[in-house]
Image 1 (cartoon, rainbow, N blue to C red):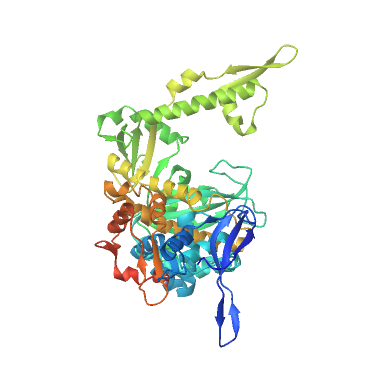
Image 2 (image 1 turned 90 degrees about the horizontal axis):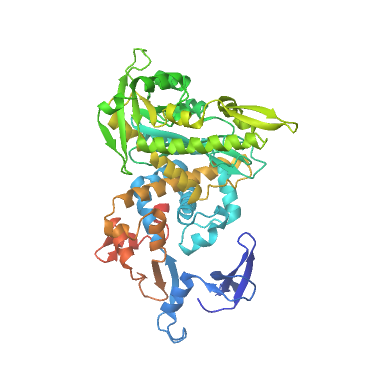
Length: 544
């Protein structure tokens, strides 16, 4: 690999030079020479020192320890294999690869999985995937080919996948439903609108992304891109219709308080889907319920939280007197009370300060009117702020540590609390989506490509969730090397398969201790070597 002159190719998107060497091959039949340019590293400037890649350095060490011309064994290629071995395993266990091939065909499924692997491992933009894919002998998609693939992945073309995927994994189960917002700078995307931005980036347009996940397996089951201006409470009907069309109606949905409305409760009841949802503290019936039973919460069992705190609970049957088999669990948590008091006190002082400076923010007009009165004094009209309700009275009078969980799924307060808190994994999934797999900003500028881009993101999230589930089952000595999906993939990144010229058999590089423990827990090694079945899948395996 060391023959040939180094060529520097400027890559504008990465703002660096990609360094390649030419490996010409002469074809006697056609009497023509074909040029193969192999990437060996990168550089900050033309003719600047080269930062060689791990693959090139490994090949150089193996094939040229004292001079390539004198070495009896020549390396033909080095394939970075560790990440692919791991993700092949997760993809096979989850059934994702099989489902994609069945629904979309072998070729397209291979491209999707190749891009999903890239997102899980790097979190970088899809247009930069080509070099990474080539080093791992995955289907290679240069930027223009990615742009061609995305519009082909429409909601209609992917419907067979979701029908198969959801029916197998969602029917009759408890699911978690939630929405996140994804900001974008794009102007040509007609789904991108201004709305409630969960990342506090209200100056940017956004789309909303509704995601349904298996509460027990923590695996994403379906997604739906929505207009950025839609509120959470109006999105539920379309999601239920999707699952009914897939013949995958769930047993129940676990949702956050943003979805609470009488219309949604009636909709779920009419569709025969049960619900578990917190009640907004602004509702009068919830405040009255807390007022009547705030002392009763200490008469029943309590729950020891993961942070060492305690949550107390009390159950009220049919709280609205509608003759329905439903329960309202009233909870009190000292830690929640402290956090909410601190948050409210800061907001109270910030709003008062705005009024004193004469720069009120109209977004908080309701808060101003409820807690303050403003008058002017003196010739200069200096504002005088009077407290309608002093802060100390607010903090002592409001039920900051109490909240209500409404459900027709679980009648026991402590079990219901545990069930509801398991939905925290979906928040971790959104963090992965935005922090680890390049969905903090939607880089797609045309609405016709949005679904395809999110579909690849969805597949990456299935893989990442499956890998996180496996890590949670690892023993402590393995978790030292694989505390998260990112840490695990980083640990195995440079595990490689080396092929040689001539009759020499390909072999894997020596495993580190961490790699050996990880591969063992994933069932990838037999003794001290990669299993033969995996050893033969050096090109496409799961992707074909």
